[in-house]
Length: 62
Ligand SMILES: [Zn+2]
Image 1 (cartoon, rainbow, N blue to C red):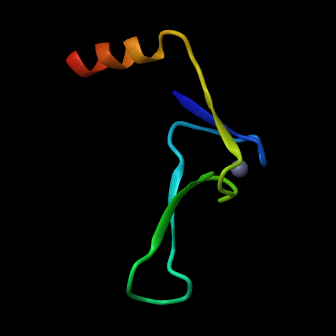
Image 2: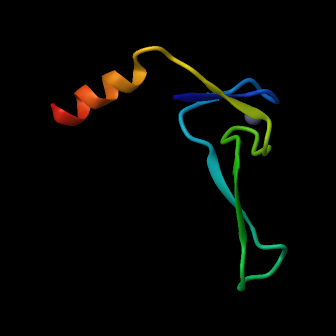
Image 3: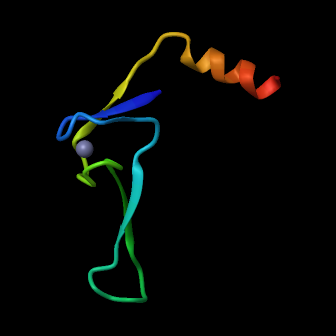
């Protein structure tokens, strides 16, 4: 499974987990998935790639 950003066109395997502390150094912070390239959230979609999952399973048992 891959993702492609609609904002900058970058393709990546996992979104970057950004945290928003609203300027505070402690307390609850929000984490959300963003594009690792342009750090824009909610602008990417999943890319289905046939056979990719099966290939990963083979690598895990090797
Ligand atoms: Zn991007």
